[in-house]
Length: 248
Image 1 (cartoon, rainbow, N blue to C red):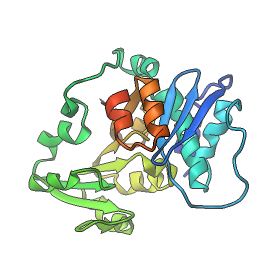
Image 2 (image 1 turned 180 degrees about the vertical axis):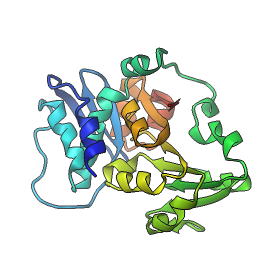
Image 3 (image 1 turned 135 degrees about the vertical axis):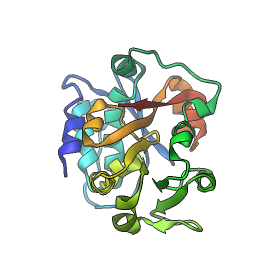
Image 4 (image 1 turned 30 degrees about the vertical axis):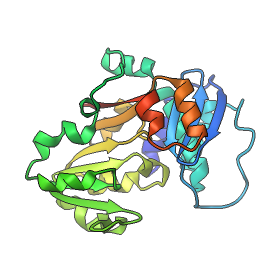
């Protein structure tokens, strides 16, 4: 179960340090010598010794905390990983193309990009993304959510629903709460798309049946840092970042 995590951690160079850390109301940011990585701020899980003296410690050491059962520590670990993988330089390495800010949100919206493909298909979405229920007009939609809204299935329904789907969109926070390995396994019959700022952008994930990575790269570090510091939710990435979708 830990293999996917260990492979991501192994991508972090040994010589990098944590330059700065920000735990915001909605997002956690880690700044390294490669860039800034973001992950959703989750709380709860195992209690115990607090993680202190984050700034200055080896980045790879912090990245390993993505395996922690303390969800805040795991958020820090995921952000550390993303500070290397979700950067303009790494995207150039993967795609041979530079990341640029687009004025058309749908150009980088994973759901919008897949609209022609998912029409009339069985589609499951893990996580209640904004306005996601509108997809129900064109496909057979099932929304699974840890805190269900009207019409959502509880996330425990994954065992029954995911094996029957044609497409499955999974929130990147599933890496943090440790449900990702099982969700990928259950979705083996479907095309899998990982979605959200927490998604680590690495071709390694294509080896686990993933069809596309819809993650986020921070382009304006100052704006993103300030918005997260002030408790912002989506503004940090609408103004300071760029969503992008990379298919295998």
